[in-house]
Length: 172
Image (cartoon, rainbow, N blue to C red; front, side, top):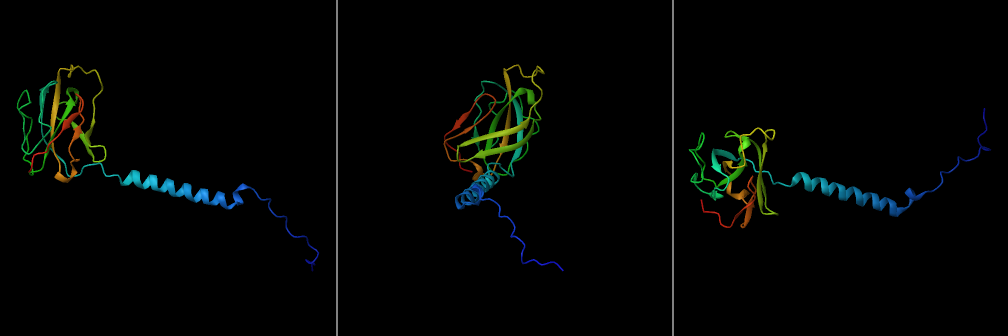
């Protein structure tokens, strides 16, 4: 049988900076800040749900479309709207897209950022240089959005010809 009374205690690990209390506090604080950033990023609700594309039409690049209306206002179109749909009575936002997207654009997301007072679209853009656009024409996309998703006025609607400032929203 072995006698353990004469055994030497195990060697202690040398202390380093990770053992200090300030380091542990700093790590906990860093994890909390990182968590807050992640939560804020994923909980930021600037994506509009329930939007509906009501119509598209070609227009000249200098056409002045009504940026927000309660009815489908196609006066700025250079020809009749393509495949118009009935709305639900919500505000209709006119977005200006490059002519290259065509009259059946693949719009993926409508954004409404209330903190920066801005609205914009994400869409699938064709490869540049297909020659359809020429810079003289654009496509107007009329998108109906729920009233509560509009930023407070004044806000801007970003499009292919630059931002358009909206100062008033008609009552629906």
